[in-house]
Length: 62
Image (cartoon, rainbow, N blue to C red; front, top):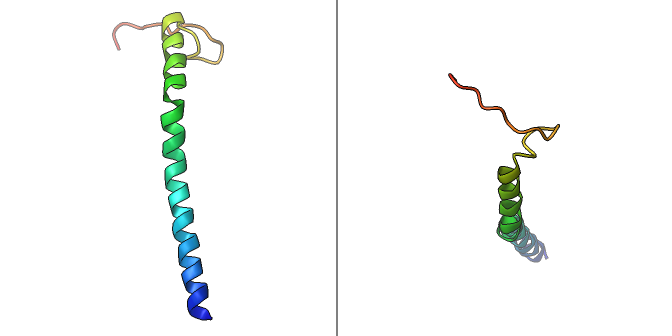
């Protein structure tokens, strides 16, 4: 009876590990195009880099 419980726990553990590893990878792959579009829009408009939404001011000499 103990062996069955140990095998069951091992199986559940490995299935859990597989789910935790594959879920973030899937989320990053699916959200890549959406994130790229947002970054492109912010670069084109100069908006979204600061909380106030003002464009960045480049400082020379740094």
